[in-house]
Image (cartoon, rainbow, N blue to C red; front, side, top):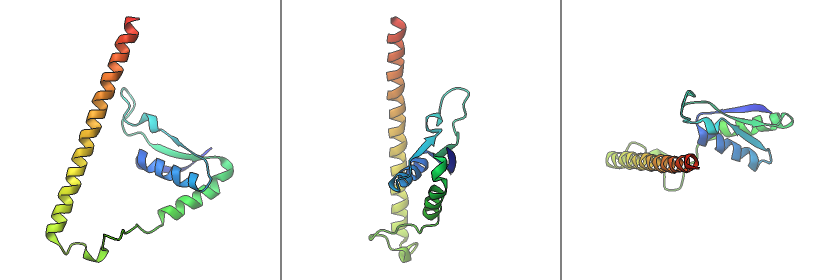
Length: 128
């Protein structure tokens, strides 16, 4: 297996993996379980996408095509209106900030709940 893509984050790696698999190229994400691990491992380990040696050229072509593609503009977005509506820009920025805050809160809750579950399992295991 060879590395064909060095991902910026876990979501990016799985996006590329799914893109490759949609083209019938089996792919494997390496390093996803090391993201944010506790202990002596760094919290920002690299994430790689691997494919079998026989499919490296086809996979690289798919990734290159994806990287060179144009961004998608949805029907409700008008690229020519960017920056013309100051109130809309402020509202959009506030909405994004709110969404980021909600995502961070949900992540925090997930980590706390996961920690409690792991702690309970550890106590049960230690008790016999």
